[in-house]
Length: 305
Image (cartoon, rainbow, N blue to C red; front, side, top):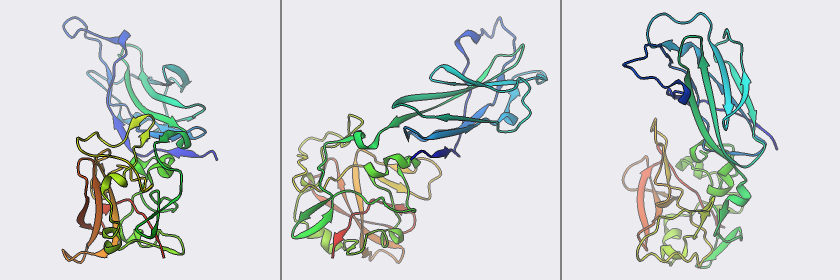
């Protein structure tokens, strides 16, 4: 299904075109500066339509007065795609682009004016097919471990929760991240969020839960001496890390290093705390932790009733 994606994160910066390089000692030509566009999420699906906006009101001149006429044009992978009016009248003018093939993309926006060096800004992303993006995992949807039937992939079928780096196309690959309260409702009928005791009864080492997975041909688990990753149970644990909901930047953390899962059990550490279990790339044990029910978002597995 095709869909339109409207990005909201702002990316700012200035890049000069190679043809517009200047030597400060000999060239006094002023530059445009301050152009911003919204940043793309890192992964999108083929068929998605992306919408970008240029914050033209932020453009200024490096010195002297602003030019009376400023133009704007866009490029995708160095191919010119759209030129707006040479006299920009609209704040946040829009550029739409539909992704028609897999691969890496760069969308660039340039502001230009006679007698000025350009102001430019670029954002990058990758178009993927989520079905083909992941390898090295078992295909069974469930795994029977210690006499109990567990879901073999992270939960993702919900309108709530957090997609990895806001890229919903990888939900089926990585699962989504949920706060503790959200995790209570994500399991389907006949299944439940496992208790700490059920996690502890797995009776296996971490390597038997870890999948030797590759995402876009890149190994997911960091290599570690002494860690034997066999995925013998078919649990398919992948190191997607966790999300700090209170952070303004770098919210998604420890990708490639750990897999962390909520339990249904409260923690003795405080009313807002719950127990979770996690797997580290360099430790053969299933580790125990306590985290905030509201500020921490983790992966979720379910157990059959």
